Image 1: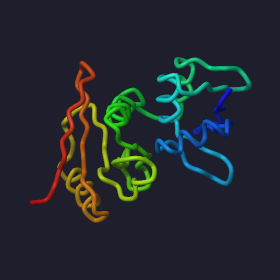
Image 2: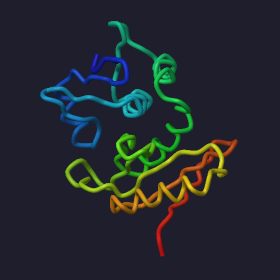
Image 3: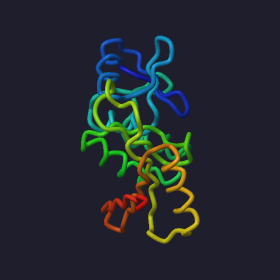
Image 4: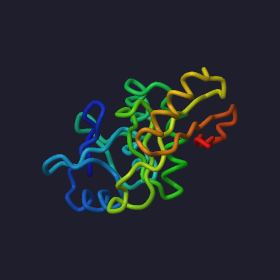
Length: 165
């Protein structure tokens, strides 16, 4: 196996795989470990780039999803947005450090030095205007763009980028 689940993270054990994933902007290096977040783990398992074990047994995509839902509210909607950005060549990281769902970078791991977008995922377009304004101000203060990704009933994603004029 290439990796194992450890609570809210996935540890990559294969040295060969570690370097390939780092090159593509996946994971966070910590000493000699490569740690994937749960979105990265799910994406890599879904695209068959990795095999994951839990309690020393290989897990399926369905089992991984059930595990993730214990830790991430509205995982399915957020994953749709994560996957959409990833498939368009962006690097997507957890945005909790700034109070958002995701941080999005352009390019590969060598060029992603500044956040291009911070993203909130919503199931509806109805949100308090004050929260939207606060989020846009925070994005502006860290010199990035604020994006709201709205998921409709057919799982179609509409992205709205807010900028000051």
